Amino acid sequence: MERIQFHADNPNKRDLKKLAEEINKGAIFIFPTDTMYALGCLMNQRAGIEKICRILNKKEKQTKMSLICPNISVVSKYTQQIDNQVFKAMKRYLPGPYTFILKSNNYVQKYFKNNREEIGIRIPHNILILELLEILEVPVISTSLNTDGEFQQSFNDPEDIFTVFENKVDILIDTGTIIGGESTVIDCTNEEMEIVRQGIGPIE
Image 1 (spheres, rainbow, N blue to C red):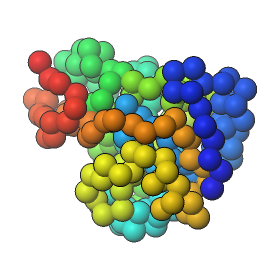
Image 2: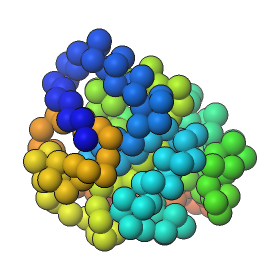
Image 3: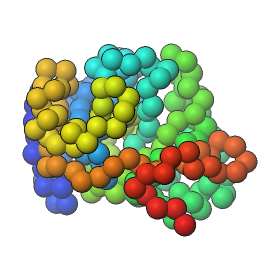
């Protein structure tokens, strides 16, 4: 594993470009968000998605994955038409510690074995990741960094992450320990939006 340290609020642009080159080539990487560290790859890397599931010892169908996007305009390229009410909510709460579950379009579905019809959408309030996403070829597909499906506080610490995943992942983006929690999850696939998990993101 290559461990790359960045300043969370002022990442080095040259190092970001080098990092983007590796990810565009298919690297599996661990990265910080505004909630916790996550594990991901480019969303069009079918082999990468399979490897992520193997690393976490989970079946793909049971792995909760989200698209990490730089802005809402990009989100609309990978989902079915976004309802006006949902769009307003996304504009209000994003970037932030929220996951919006939307209906995926055919382009996204073809990269999953079960033609996943729903996908979580995240635009984290994290300067490094948002700047990185602007220079990647496509959004990142990711899942929370845990090994048993339960939230583990220890994996917010890069030292713990390096110890456990050193020989399993290509890159660790290290911005230090994150004091976070789980994102608030909002299901937008039905007529009425529903909060399915209350995380650290408040809902008014």
